[in-house]
Amino acid sequence: MEFTIKPAKKKKRSKGGQAAKIVCELAHCHRMPDHCTRPECLQRIDDNTQSLENEKLALAISLDSRISETKRLVAEIQKECNLEALNDDDMRSSFEAFKTGIDARTTHVACKCMDCKQKQADLELALVAERLAVTQDWLAALRGYRSNHDLEAVQRPSGQSTK
Image (spheres, rainbow, N blue to C red):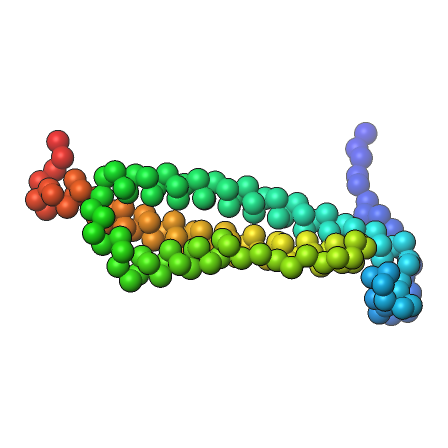
């Protein structure tokens, strides 16, 4: 006996054969007059907030590992590299950009409604993404410095191997 799978029947839609998508035009913060209290809107906002929090957590984990890598690389550079060029303009400006990006803070929203929580989560996600970007730039600068100023590579004649 042979079985076949048939596609499901299409559900009847509203006018024009498309699902009616209702876009809420009201504010969702309870501090606003005539705010929306529809459960589907509140659920959508809660789902969006949770998604933003999950994405922020993933970026924060990546950021932590990058910061650990920069600390390790700085310690390695201090032990094994020529430090004279560490204070040149390129490295100084790269470090200042890193420091400024890491020290940046978001403003906290006093309201604890779901809409304001989503806006706060969105701001925090953007901040973590910016911190990750400046950390990756600083890490790339450190890696370049490490490869260009390694004491063994600098002291070794260009044609000889390390064997």
